[in-house]
Length: 106
Image (cartoon, rainbow, N blue to C red; front, top):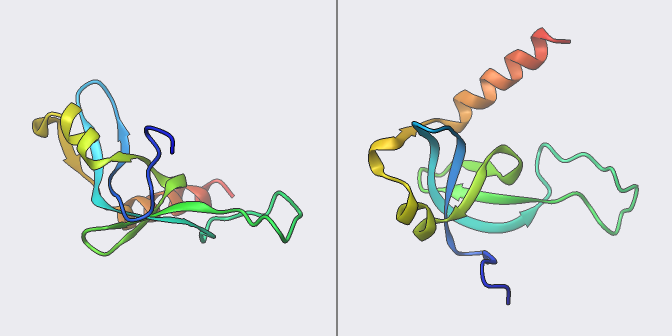
């Protein structure tokens, strides 16, 4: 097993984005494994290898996909992130913003 490999069932932190002053954070949750996401696009043309993505179930019950965030083991995040730098974000609000921007540009 790889040293830093995250296995299904392990606790993780999901990060929307960060800069020098803050970490915009979706929350803690559990990595459930790789699944076909609602954002999947079949670029392989191969039915044997569907496009999968890491699925994270946050403690609040919401799902965040790996394509939507940076994620790492919860213990690693807690060890390097000062609590006063964390700003909580909501994945549903961010999805709505992203969809609005996409609609404006089409």
